[in-house]
Amino acid sequence: MGVAEIKRTKKLLKVFIAFTLAAALVFIYSNHFLSVKNYTVKSPKLPNSFKGYKIALITDLHNASFGKDNNTLIKKLEEAAPDLVLLGGDMVSTSDTDYSVFFSLAEKLAESYDTYFIVGNHEQALGEERTELFYQSVESLGVKTLNNKMVTLEKNGEKINLYGMWFNLRYYTDRSEDATHTEQNYYFGTDAMEEILGKPNNENFNLLLTHNPLYFETYAKWGADLTLSGHTHGGMIRIPFKGGVYSPEKTFFPEYDGGLFEKQNKTLIVSRGLGNGTEGFRLFNPPELVFVVLER
Image 1 (tube, rainbow, N blue to C red):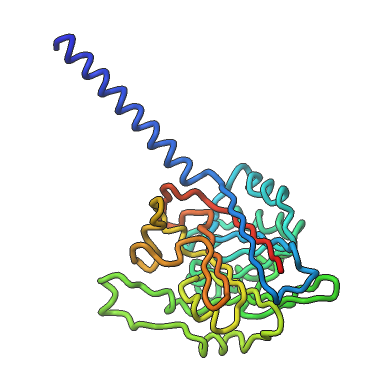
Image 2 (tube, rainbow, N blue to C red):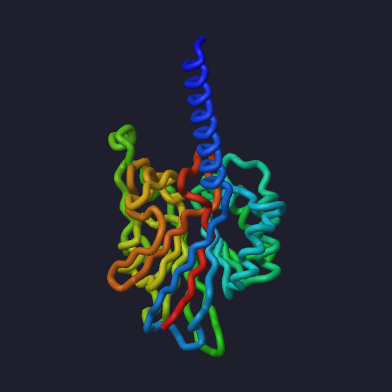
């Protein structure tokens, strides 16, 4: 091998090493760096006492841990000092057999914050008996569960409504070509939503926590002033100026991949979530902790 070939080989090796290191750093950042996203939502229906009210939205944890015992996540919450913590489902994966990571986090949250939980599709897929046991375990830790019901949040004698909703797994559509000829096309409309939650009190500000953002139009028509969701994992891979690439519905470039959306003067905020799921990964899409501040 001549001198020129040796130099060229060394140069190629350096380029390969640099590329490999860069790819590794991007992958580590995309899957393990905890990012924070802040939103402000304004509504004339919000009572004066709730001006500046801060909500932390934690979704799609899938039993992931950020720092030992999730201390990194806990610290970011302590710094933000939210008035309310909402756990938006898929806090564990269906395939998990050990829920201790989530249960430990839930217990710490309940000790410091008013904390509510709804199930996602992964908890629902555990089966009716195991899901009920999961509910009981979460409640034993001090977390309040929203099993298709409404609670009233009060501050200085004024109120807003918090609804927690889940629906049948058949509404988590599979839109892949392989599924179109085998699965019925279900749509979750306002009639189905009223059967689950009843009609809302539209004189009050209505906050809806539900795992799946796909039916935002239904939530808005029903009367949810602000809907908080997760589920889509930010589209797994994010492309600048284009958004998330792939959704759990097995479609490319989902509409509600992450961020803030508006319809009919109603707002949807979709968290890109924290964990990866059973077979998932992230690229240019770091785990996300969301804070929402309410204003008039």
